[in-house]
Amino acid sequence: MRHAMAREWQMGLSIFGECDFSDQNKVVFDETKMSLTLRKDASGKYPVGGDDIWVRLPGLNPLAAQTWFGFDAEYANKRMLGVVVTSLSWRMNNGSADRVWDGAAWVAPAPALQWNTHAEIQAGMPSWTAKTARPVVKLTTTSAKQAPELYRVRLGVWVNTNSSWSEIVHKGLVKLFKTNIRPVTDIVITWPNAATYNVGSLAQEEPVEIVNIDGVFNHATDPEGYTCLSYSYNVGTKVLTVTPAPTNGTKIRLRVIYRPDIAFSTHMDYLTSSKLPGLIIQEVEQRMVMDAGRQVGFVDRNSPSAAAKVVLSPRQFDIAFTVKAAAKGSNESAGLAEEAMRVVKNNPIVHVASMDSYGTVVLQGELTMVPSFDEANCHEATFGGMIRFADMWYSGVADGNGVANLNIDAAQAPN
Image (cartoon, rainbow, N blue to C red; front, side, top):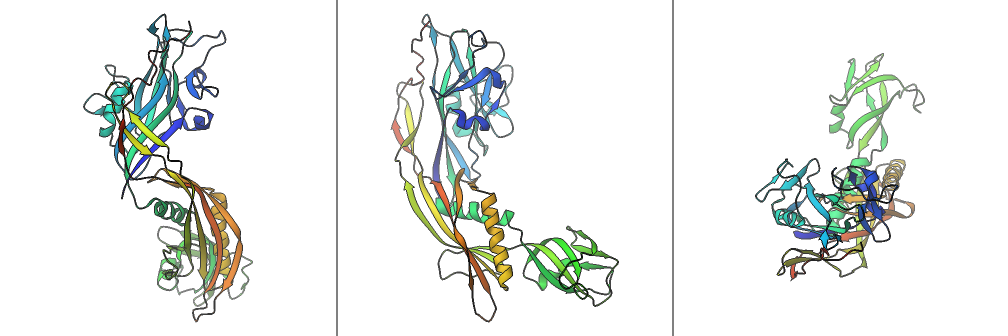
């Protein structure tokens, strides 16, 4: 499904950590005017001309980006005795390098074309093909008494995604669990008549996906696993070497780190995981928090008959979910659930790169044990959580009425 996504950055200290600077000592975020401007020196004067003073601003990085359609900035240039003495120049960064629009293509800055105007960046945005877009602004003044002011910047892009809440659960919560949950369990094997053991062969016998070995114990003489044997494990070849090698037929306990199966249930009738132990995310419910209805516009400010594109701001939802940890033993199911809870606590922000959206994950309630009594001896442990204030974008872009010259070029500043 095609969604229109727009993001607006108000200039202020809240975005300071997301910016790159040519010289951080020559710019300042004015919290009174909520603007980015030049910083005065000790004598109260602004830096005049000469060196490039630029700031690389935050940007968008949606992996499912299709077409960029909007760039806009609200700013004020100043005059002295009727003459404009300040300016803002622009580049666009693709995540690794700055680019300028030469009228036909995005190219590396060169002596003949170092920076673009606001209008040139707007004209080139439909041809921007990179997944990342970060505006870069240069602030310039020819008067030590005046400085330009940048108030806010906007970007807009078409993205190809599923429904917003499904994206947040699939590419946010599920990815969070798959990437970070690495519980530990014990597996008892019979050592073969060989110097090494192929742990990869366990894939046909054990349902877990083993990613590493955390300990090796002689199960016959040390059933509680107090003394770890001397061993080495090759993660690539999955070959385990114990020194000295156990004799043929010895029961060896492997303490393995594994990657559990992660399943997303779309309905209460579908609560099965392909293998145990596994995590099942179920009972997903979205609750609207805010529907501001505010519009984000992208306007060509340099034409009296400018056309505008308008995108509705995202709605915000809370997404409640329940996670069920299923395993063949009660201790293992509880351990798996506790590991999932640990991951949530240590990763309070879930980010969805395809939408460039994020929400805060909050645990609700305590871990509860729900043992079942089926023939498979499956035990379950559950906990609840919520993704707070998740952005969900509307899918449309509408034509709006153009407004010219909001950059206040004609404003007369005090001398």
